[in-house]
Structures are given as C-alpha cells and as structure tokens.
Length: 208
Image 1 (cartoon, rainbow, N blue to C red):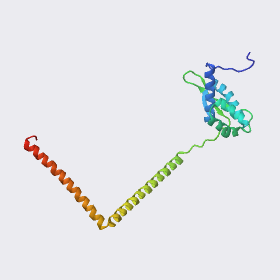
Image 2 (image 1 turned 120 degrees about the vertical axis):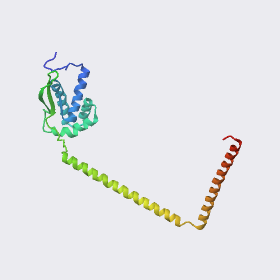
Image 3 (image 1 turned 90 degrees about the vertical axis):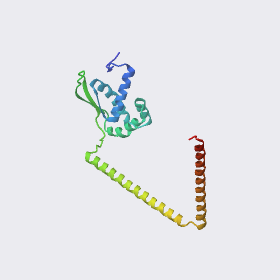
Image 4 (image 1 turned 30 degrees about the horizontal axis):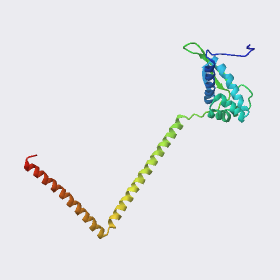
C-alpha cells in the first residue's frame, strides 16, 4: 500500500525516469538554475534536497553516497566545496520552484528549479573584455618586435662571422681552394667536350 508516499511516474519507465532525474540534479549542481515542466521540477526537487543535505557532514561516507547518485567526481567536489558552505545555516529548503507560464506546443506548465542560495558568477562587462583584448594585442605586438630584433641580431652576427672567417684564411688554404676549383672546371670542360664529340659522330652517320 502507498500510505501517503508520493509517486509520480512522469510517463516513463523506471530506469529512464531515474536517469533523467539524476541528470537534472547534475545540471542543477552545475548551473544552479534549470528550466523544466512543473511535474518534473517537483520530482527533481526531492532528490536535489536529499543530495544537498548530504553536504551538512563533509565526510568520506557522505561523499561516497553523493558519488553513488551523481557518478561524477568533479560534481561531488563542487558540491562539497562550493555549494555546501552556502547552506551552513539551513536545515531544509535548499531548492525552490518558480513557475513561469505555459509552453506553446502542448500548454504544459513550465517552471524554474534553482538553489535558494546561489554562488555569484562574475560576468565581465563589454568594456573590460575590450580592455583585455587590447592588452593581449599589445602583448602580441611586443613579442613580435622582440622576435624581429633577435632575428636581426642573429643575421648581423652571422655576417660578422663570415667576414672574420674570410679574413682569417691562410695563403696555403687559398691555394688549395684554387686548385680544387681549377680541377672542377677541367672535369666539367672534359665532360662537355666528350658529349660534343659523341653528338658529332652521330650527326656524321645521319642518326640525328
């Protein structure tokens, strides 16, 4: 027998209903305010209040119970470190339902489910965003100028080293280099002459 136990099936099977309710509790912990139908909000509120009540005692047992429901370590950390301290002076009433109106498609009653004490999320104004973007642009320009100056210094150093290396050559090294160059020229001239002779032979025979 039911004996004053509130049960709402939400037109779903048990496994699907449990999964949807848990996912809604996760999104409530993450965003602190979610929108849904009034019937779902009443069901999600019960589980959300039970989860919030676990933060009254920050222990290993309570964290494991919360993890069994949420199955997410990051959300459990956020629940006990950020959201839990907001409800130190409360023993109940961790969430509330605010009705909005009806939905256009099917006329269902919509509502907001939110935490009664929410953490303040700082939103940057447009001016501060522009200031940060300008500061980033200035930093990037300064970095580019530094890189360009470093490249110029490196090129200047390379040219200096080249001039120094040329000036430091001994006469024996210059002679050896000239010999190598002359031998290379002779080899190239001999190859060209050989090719010319072969072409002349083929032309005499009438092949080309």
